Length: 163
Image (cartoon, rainbow, N blue to C red; front, side):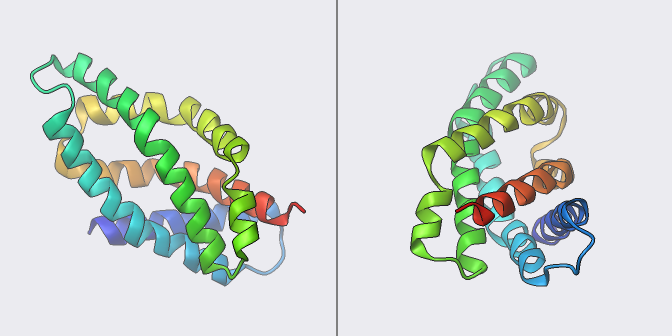
């Protein structure tokens, strides 16, 4: 269920990004690449990440303090990893070159995406870590990912189009 919902919601985000970018034909390869990232890598990594965080970060703290600590760890560790893995996945699955992968995963591009993400994800993740039970976190964050994946899809497309 987590993989299916994440794949569908990531696809929806890419669909929205493509509609915002142009009225031309849908890039089905990009849509499938984005959806497959959500269904496989994102869902699996989030599942294990949330379980690890629950067992190892801020155990025994008050729920609010634990949520703040987990959001800090999430923002510092998982978010950059997730951005690099998405940009890499999209580059490889859409047939781009090794040089394009290195260019897209440049530290400035990763940092600017991460910085934009903090505006969206910090409040979202505070709510997730504070109020959503562990078993529901992947599905809830996948739902929030409709908007974020729309942004990331656009950002990834812009970076691929840059010389």
